[in-house]
Image 1 (cartoon, rainbow, N blue to C red):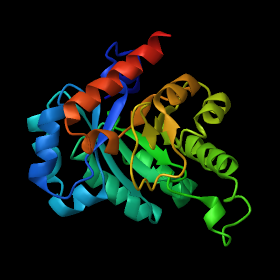
Image 2: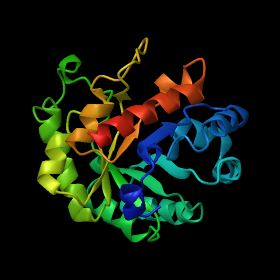
Image 3: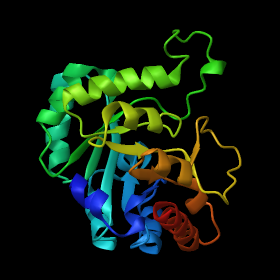
Image 4: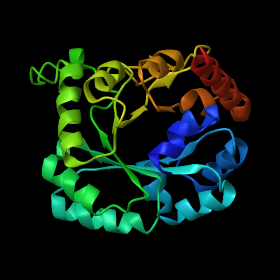
Length: 247
């Protein structure tokens, strides 16, 4: 899905990414059936991709043909290896795919060069589970996540990445620094009505806050997946997105 199709869509559900953080094919396809038409993208992370292999992409497309595919592999290796991995990824034709910005400029350039035009490369800056206060061994920069994320983002933009993955704490600064061009994908988002028990996300944000600060896509998993009725939860989030965009 090209960037302009994401941003120009009149459907507020386009802004919602649901991570299929499950290990089993049947569970993933059941969630896809329930949420087809209610979310813009299904995110396939390492757990599902490793357990089920690349065939899960075609299975999801068959179950929910109008929902985008976000392949969240966070590739991080030497440039030649990442380039070859991206050549393999290209055959799956995902709409979005991630590399890790900490892999360096040349690695990200190699990833972009090996990616087809219809796939958007996102650079992951800092994981939202990072809690600098708990890690005294971290470098001085790493203890200031906003500054460190901005430096990684700058490197990613120079490398040609089309978008960035960052927490809701950084989205305002990233949009101010880099303008309207990069797609900003924000995980760790919690709707106003949700409470997640044993949440390992340290730097979370809200639907309204992230969108107002300049986010394009919101990654929301557990508030939907753990709800008694995932479809109803997704509908409530889409309504919250629509209300925010209308104000």
